[in-house]
Length: 120
Image (cartoon, rainbow, N blue to C red; front, top):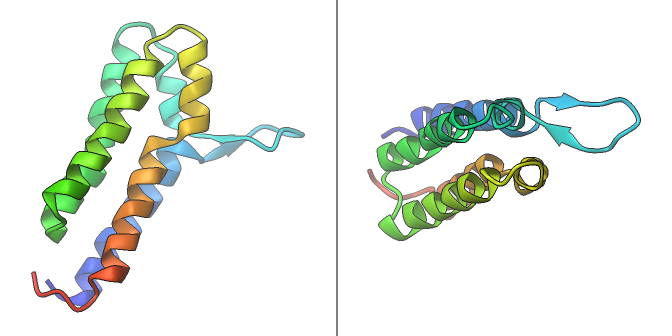
């Protein structure tokens, strides 16, 4: 995969995860949240849907050729976010603070920087 293609995928993941975890800001409150936090408010299906949306960065990781260890770490972030997110009110607050999708995007970005010369 060429460097420009790799950068395009990483930029797409950055934009996507920012939309999921940090797109919106309430006035006078320094906390950002995204569509993930809003969808998670829907009882029952919200957390399942946000889990599915959170799989996209993992899929990009597979396309980039990241290690299985990194994919597992990313999946653990997503599972933690989903499981705790199912707890009414507390889970929603945790979801807004934990930002699993941004964490996963940062892990992908760091991997790409560390493996810039890797041939995939």
